[in-house]
Amino acid sequence: MSRIAPLQPPYPEEAATLLAAMMPPGVPPIALFRLFARNLPMARATHGWGRYELGRDLTLTMRQREIVIDRTCARCGCEYEWSVHVQMFGARVALTPDQQRSLADGSATDACWTDDTERLLIEAVDALHDTSDIDDGLWARLAKSFDEPQLIDLLLLCGWYHAISFVARATRLPLESKPEASAA
Image (cartoon, rainbow, N blue to C red; front, side, top):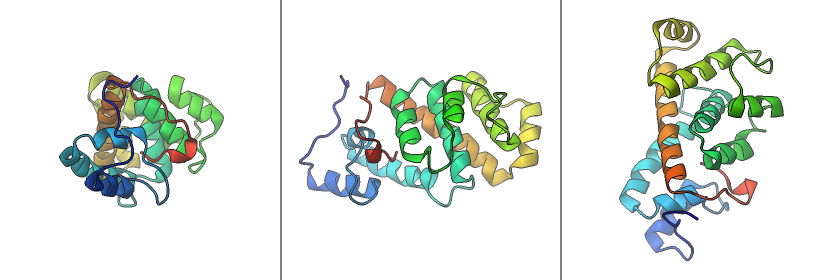
């Protein structure tokens, strides 16, 4: 049972407009966004940031983005958001079942990871999760594969999904029932 119940339809007009903008056309809003709609000023503010993190302006590829998000959510123990992303984007970015399992319970050294930059992303997420920092050695390796805008995006993407995980876990959001309704 969610500690703060996500808004239920029929939505007030302002909330309905915002929720429609937060989702692909014709897709009902996920519980996280309906929860955000309980605080419309905050929901409007986070919508802009969320659009950047999931949009084409992010300097990481869609696959890199999903690796960072999935690993972050898994490390935060946020089954809600992890499942939203795996269901919505896992196939789109060609994450194999072994890679999905590894992101949830494995490590960057698992045999399913053959791309060094993907291993680095997992290491970076783990370091940020464990220490809120990246040591000089890992930073130097990251800087050889990613430019400064990508590094900044990596750091903020990981932090953003820590925040999303905190909200989803602390409010006890129930898992989404329909995979096609996932787009956070």
